[in-house]
Length: 332
Image (cartoon, rainbow, N blue to C red; front, side):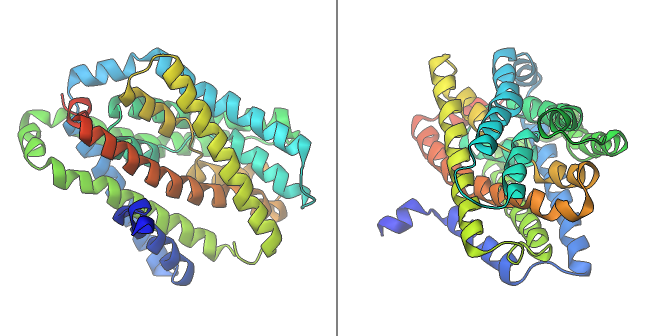
């Protein structure tokens, strides 16, 4: 019973999704099907977020410069600094490519959809999360290759790929959000009446992202590229790295006097790393034979951050529901 209290139904569903992807990953035509389904779910998620948020809430979220500044510092300063120290320390005798992979994941921008979905699920400042996560992803398209060149001494560029990713972000995330916001005169009342049902879109999008991402990792041979010992080291190091960043973000948010809703946004937007951006960039920045090992820490860290943040979001949500704060932070 104590174990069931720790692992709430949503977390257990996440675990089941990971196991399903491990034993029955999407292959063949199903890869395209789940990719399309995930894209549609995320687009619907952002449409609903746009419909839920008032103009005043968006203005407040976009003008919250102190919050955005720290999220950028966490993503592009704190993470890379930890990656450099970890690669320099090299506490365990494993392949140097694994340490390079950790440094690479620390350089990447934040995820967009999962950061915002977890922020919404936990009762955080969704408007600020949309601004911070989207800005991180857009800036990362240009900053991450620069940081790779500076910290990993690797040549290459990602200008064309970067332009494609900018277009994808605009089309998949910002456009549905804007359309949803513009639809408020017709949809605001319906959204308010069905808020509980709409909340399920957050969880559904997360489950689809987990299954699709982990299926891709399994199809790329994640379980055959390294031995059990090295794999265990990557898992442990990923947990420690995530724990440090979560702790620092929480401490900074509280010491700087941010509200609980803003603290949630900082925690979830400042602790994520993007698999969607990381793998395409790796294909351009690194030799073909090195890409698999280079993105292995990223693939594992990506799954761990989803699992840990799911539990953390549920914990925040319970506390927010007890205080009645969730509705106040997400309504306009």
